[in-house]
Amino acid sequence: MGKTLRFGAETNRDRPKTKVFGIGGAGRNILSSLMDDQSVTNMSFCEVGEKKRFNNCSFININKKEIRDSYDSMMNIGNSYSNLSEEKINRSTEKGDLFYILSGLGGETGSWTTPIFSKKASKQGFTMVFVAMPFRNEGGSRYRLAKESKEKISKNCDVLAVFENSRLLKMSPHLPMTKAFDVMNSIIMLPITDFNAVMTRGDISSLQEFCKGVDEFRIGAGYGKGRKRGKRASKEAYRSPWLDEPEKYETILTVVTSGQGSAELEAEDALEVIRRRSPNANIMWGLRKDPNLGERTRVTLLAAI
Image (cartoon, rainbow, N blue to C red; front, side, top):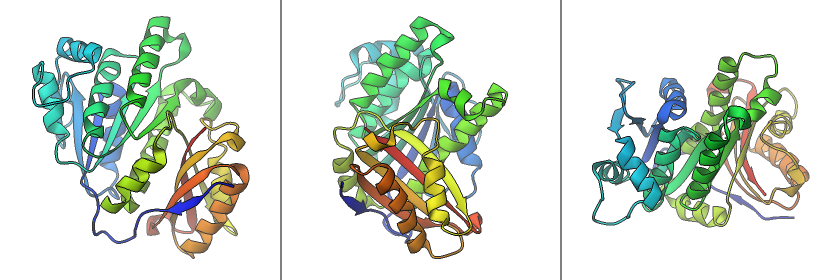
């Protein structure tokens, strides 16, 4: 059995300075949903692209040719920059402790820009990158670019969580694709809101050490209600379309969010399921309370083989 460690605190003191970047169309769609969530605090938001879409967050205008040149060279991190887009990225990631980078890979903006942001951000603080991969039938060149970009990102961040678009069909086979993408965006938001609510500056070094050597995480999220709702939530989280072969997972980050009830007991019930489903995994977990959940419990987990 792997080790089980706890991180986070319920107090609002010593929270990290958090920056969220939505890159390209897909990344900015997730960013928009996140900005609409009234429970989100202690975050600054920034959209990244060629044209500004939102009025309530900052904006980084990038030049595609400059970004392509930087992507090919994977930019020179240092005191000098080869172009203006690099300089903007460097400035935007200064003075941060925790970075969330949201993107869809396959298109030029997301594929070229996301590795550059993750490389710079990881020099400053704990960096979590959430990317959607295109459908395999969208075109060979698009998928190859996404795969190449994903490999670059994985070398320059602490957590890379990957969402295969093809698995949306498994999750919502009867939903129109636009609605299915809305569901996926709402799921991607959960680890951002949950981790941000419990993480402290003091957790960063231990989380970085815990995640070292992991190339790719997959996400699961579930809700439970009624008796043993912590167990119910964990079981539903493991039914995520992005999780399979749970017995092979070796590294798991999870947050248990409790509404009304005994949070500690619900967390223990949730962890019991995780330990049983993934017996060899090292687990790092946090606990938060959210009265808005009412009589429900939520389990959000990031799992890696």
